[in-house]
Length: 213
Image (cartoon, rainbow, N blue to C red; front, side, top):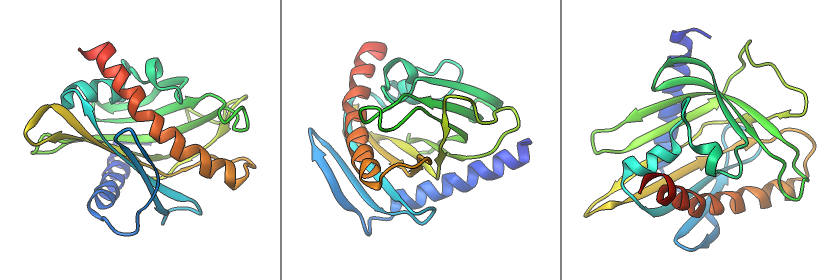
């Protein structure tokens, strides 16, 4: 994949994420508690769900971003229980990369380890919001690996947003729509994602306190 292809793919997925962020229609709450709300609606990308998580974190947007940002010094594998490893396959700039993310087994090992290869674009907005947008790509340097089922992330990512009047807090909106592949019962998938997204927020909050205070 060359720079032009990666840039085009990154900008397209960023536009889709912005559309998700701005469109309030059709969301159904599937999990709520401890200040975190997880909603879903049918995906337009594949035969699954688009999930949206929303919550407020203690910490500035920059502190929260330090724990979320992709890159060679990513903290994700240190705190995110759904990330066992993260690597840069090809880097075009600090804001545009091809990445491979590996995940451990989950749901009492009903879900075996997965890996995902994505183009990831980081954008900064005038109001101080930082977004990361990702979608699956094929890359010659990262063929399927033994021991992992290759999954596919359809447009997903998050918005790290300043909270007006609360400089030490951050509004985080996250979107996931992932095809785990394999032969998984739909009931397992439908139970896994809302729970995983709800747990993501308190785990991130602990990471912010641990690594960024």
